[in-house]
Image: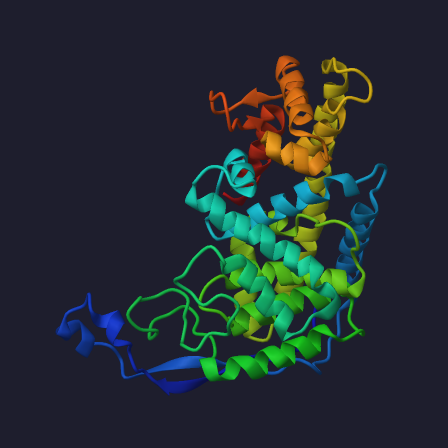
Amino acid sequence: MVAAWPALTHEVVPWSPSPDGLVAHSRRASRLVPATYRAAVVPAIAGAGLLLGGDLAADLDEATRLLAAFDAGGAGEIAPFASVLLRSESAASSQIENLTSSARALAEAEIGEGNRANAAVILGNVRTMQAALDLAGRLDERAVLAMHRALMAHQSLHAAGEWRTEQVWLGGSTLHPGDAEYVPPVASEVPALMADLVAFMDRDDLPPLAHAALAHAQFETIHPFTDGNGRTGRALLHSVLLHTGAIRRVTVPISAGLLAIREDYFAALTAYRGGDAEPILRCVAEAARSGTHIGERLVGELRGIRSGWDEQVTARAGAAAWPLLDLLLRQPVVTARVVGAELGVSAPTAQSALARLVDDGVLLESTGHRRNRVYRAPSVLAALDAYAAGLGRRAR
């Protein structure tokens, strides 16, 4: 159990609907909109005490040890698969928001090919997660805004990298927040609440996984943006873990673990707002444990694919086809331009390596064109799609 955590209260706020929001509604419907609503009053947590019961502390400690072991590589080196794990975690976090895309579409989007909308959205989440890792050394308001800016750069409907200046709410009517499932604090409170959260994240007296879970839950409670809060908040969870030193090298698929218990996860966030922090701590511990197992299985499958290629490829020793194999594990859709830039080889050398891997059955050419060809590694894409499908089945 956890000793009482600060619970939010509520305030009654006058409702001033946006004229734009009433355009599609009749005047009669407008008159039925309540004149007031109840918004959350979120408590500060920068100095909140955390007292964990022995069972919960042990649960968090075990999950943290698994994270550290996975990050260190366990029996083999995990680091070469860091970019695959980053992309997979980003996709799982998006899947929690019901955003899905095939591995091929996402890989094409990463190199500027294809035009699938969901892939572009999820690619924004990949960039958010990378920003979260890059900025973990200075977890301040500017870092959080930079994460959100990376996420929302693909769209123009929502202000990217800016605190919200309007009321948002979850569930209920799109016309007013009166019957919403949760109404976050009024916009004017966001800057001070985020400053308090930054102070909380800078503490050094909390168990790392509990620290990350509570920071994430507080972020979701504040809901500082008009959109993208869930994905930014899960990226922030990784930032805190990196900031504490619990992980150092790779992105553990914690969102993959949360996806498998999505309803419990959402219920835990609700409980947190009521002053019960134990459910979110349990959820994140469970997600960390299952995430390490999920990551190990994915890395093991990719290792098997790479090992099989060693037997399959007929290129001479020292040929560019060999380092290209390693590139394909983290970027399973490529062009000659991408290969040349990544491997530092000439265009003819890149094209020759691609042709060799097509002949050896590692790659397929996707376009059928004579120029501007796109190549894909179907075995890697199939493994990544199977991984994502497995997460979806566990969630259901």
